[in-house]
Structure formats: structure tokens, C-alpha cells
Image (tube, rainbow, N blue to C red):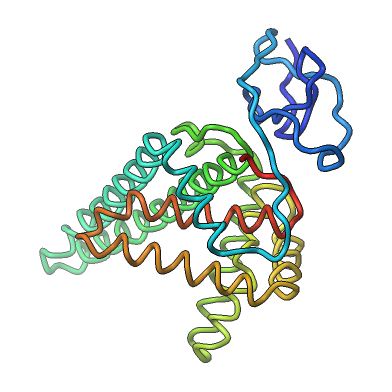
Length: 276
């Protein structure tokens, strides 16, 4: 048995170029010239794996927010069960992490100095653990969005995958830190960081680039397409906001739709094919 190669375009046992997500075959060949020359076919557990063929298109510039929304809604309708499951599991994990953190504060309520020190120490440790877990599952949510645009069905297992996880965490941390500092100094610099670095975590996760290179590439993409990106981000936020109106229940749909819109725009700006 050989180790499976990383995600990418490869030839399947029949000689057809398909998307390999690291575990199984996915999308069929993209349009000619849009994928690199495929190497030898990979295997999984010593056996060739094959999935139904899918159609790919290469969206044309300029990036259209309306098309992005239509694509995202279509893909949500196709994979709503998996996507809703992912959102629900992430929400439950976040709730459990917060609950554990506040339970850790109970010793501090006794009023004693020792109890207070123990309580706050446990609280900080619990928050740190919750933050670490949050980074991991957030990466999984991004993986689901990237998978959908690549013609691969999202699955719960993506929440615990570790491919490019280190570069993703480093990038997300730097972007969050920059946005926080920029917001404290003045709101506008913080917003600029959020906008110009909006694709950096996706790039780090998808391409495996280091934090600095991922941030640099994101800035380049946004700078060259600022108006289009702003419209996409505003529309994605509007979708998220509408989902939060119905006692946040609508977020199980609005979060995946907004995420797929952003990953779609990332693929388009990179000139990559997306599943039809």
C-alpha cells in the first residue's frame, strides 16, 4: 500500500483527469488547459477509488456577486444535509467550550484568594483550549467550502482533518491579530485588514502557503479586484445577517451559503475551474 498523495488533479485508473481530495476521487476533468499535467493515479488502501463524473466551468471576469450567490445557493441545496450537520456540530462544540470555561470559574465564587486563583487559571486554560479547538473546526468549515467548489461532497470528517492546518492557524492568527490592533488604533485600518486579508486563510488551507505568502497573495487578489470583492463580502454579510434574524436558526443555511460565495469568488479570482 502506498501513501495517498495530497489533494489535486490526477488521472484515475481509466486515464480521466479527476479531482483527488486526499481520500477519494471527486470531480471529473476540468476544461482543457485549466489543470496541471496529472501524475500517476493514486490509490486508497491499495484499491482504486472512483466517483461519478462532474462538469466543470471556468467563470469569466468580472466576478459577478449575483452569480456567486446563485452558485452558493445551488450547492447548498445539493449538499444541505452535510453542510447543516457541519454548522450544527461546530455550534455545539463552541457552546460546550464556552460552558466548560464558565464552569471552571465556579471555584472563584467562594471568595477565597486560593479559590479565585484556581478558578481564573482554569477559566483561562479552558478558553485557550476552546480557541485551539475553534481554529481546528473553523479550518474544517473552510475545507467544506473549498470542497464544494471543487466538486467534492462535504463531510463531517473535514472538521478534524489536519492537512495544511499549521499554516492555516498561523495565517488566521496573524489576520485576527492585525484586525484587532487595527480596530483599536482606528476602525478603518481594522476593516482594511479584514477586507484585504479575507482570502488569506483560504489560500493557506488550499495551497499550503505560509502565513506571510498567503496574506501577500490575498492582498494582491483583493487589490486587483477591490470593487468586486467588496460587493461579494457585503452580500455574504447580508446573507449571514438575514439568517440571524429568525432567532439565529437561519444561520444553518446562511453560514454555508455565505461561505460558498466567498470560496467561489476565491476560485474565480485565481482563475480556477469550479464545479457546475
